[in-house]
Image (cartoon, rainbow over all chains, first blue to last red; front, side):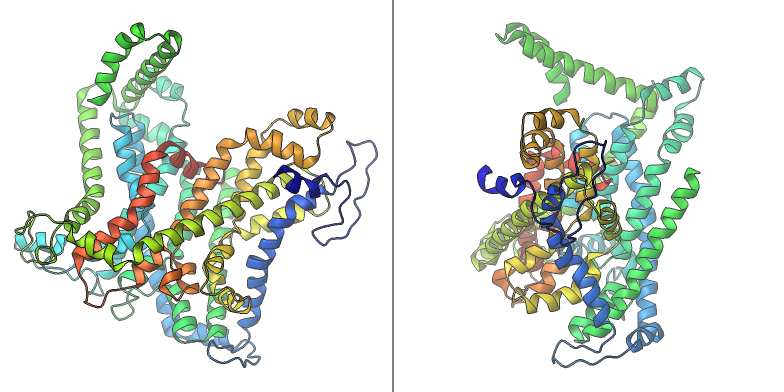
Length: 317
Length: 320
């Protein structure tokens, strides 16, 4: 094994692998001359990076300027018409609106509940193993297992939730079929499924708080609530910033659980922007148009990341 | 409860065991850990009983709410179809408990195949991703070459690209490469994970460079140094990243769903989610399938809980 994998690296001066073909400039007086083995280490990664990331990005950008279709091979240049069509389509805006609505109603509980869970476990309550398992395990379920379980819980008459409501004489709710309720139900499923990830991030951050901070506060006579608000929460500021960003980006990319639970219904009330792209490309066969919408969505994601970075920078200085 | 028994028996046992010092050290560590937990409880919840009682109540309620959906699914999977769809709700099935749903689901046959496909795909993705990312991370961390900075900035920028926007061009690309509806087509586009390169670079940056220089003085090549000096020191991060990548690949839905068409090629999330039986919705069977689909990762989690938790915490935070 070692002999085969070792050979390219031990060659003293391999031809430039990454295609740069530039000779390294020697800097006398500094460490041994920069070796070009760096390219060999990078080559496999760059190969896949170029093939499955850079190329599709460029190819998708090109496609977005054509009216390429999934069903026939002819495609012609369409200029920016796909973009102008997307930007004037009320359905695109409503699915974008749904996505933003979902992002808000899912992110807030996902952050608050995960912090509460992490804090409780962090305080050293007995039964650590059990609490961690219960809060984190749903995150390990494949999405279709999650949606199967919840579709069953949400069913009328013999679903657990409606069945219980029925027992107590309360009217059943169309959890997934009422267009006023459906997105909230999706957010609930998402909370149950993914809270474990934020929980772990918070837990590991909490465990890095040095004990002596609490001890000092205790000596100063701060009560336990006071210690939570004046020490724990301020120490969690940067972690919370990171979790908000990760959560917002994850929520904006919502697709799987909606697609499997409601397929965007009822009446498009839960259709997310990614589903709009999927519908355009793979149900409507309009790959060019789907690519253009992908790029509009991409712009939104980049914008959110940049805004967050700007905030983080401003806080630092 | 379990904790109190270990505390009571451990010191007595340690005196009797022949491997004295070792067991003793372990006991001491355990006692120490307990004392620290108690100390932290006092610091965060106060010395009184009130704070603790409140904390236990809240954590127990949350845990019960979180366990309930899964528990209900397990119970329902052991009922007959008639009892599952009976209204009003039956908590104790009239027809008794049965494993019929499991029998019929396994007899229908696709689920074991999907699990096998998921094992193949996730293993392939993990091996390739970890290998190429570790090599690249080492190059970014240690080696000097032209364009290093620029390529690393490109990798960081790639973090912002949502994989979902690539599905349309990738799908076209897979058809051109004749990889659509194949396991390779499912696996290969998933191996580019810039976050893993960054996580591992951050780790390599913290290994003292002296060790590598010593090996280099002994005449070891760059690759030799990486393979015999750096990798053995990086076991923890390699485990963390492998776990993260494996689970992400196992649970990936959108791309495998787009690129597969035949049921024999599907992975477990795609198969369970899209292939429905011809008799309409049968909830007992649905729950049985879901439980079988959930089992592999849950077993892995029970076995490697510590590693998985650490793996997600480090990889998720970008290795900070």
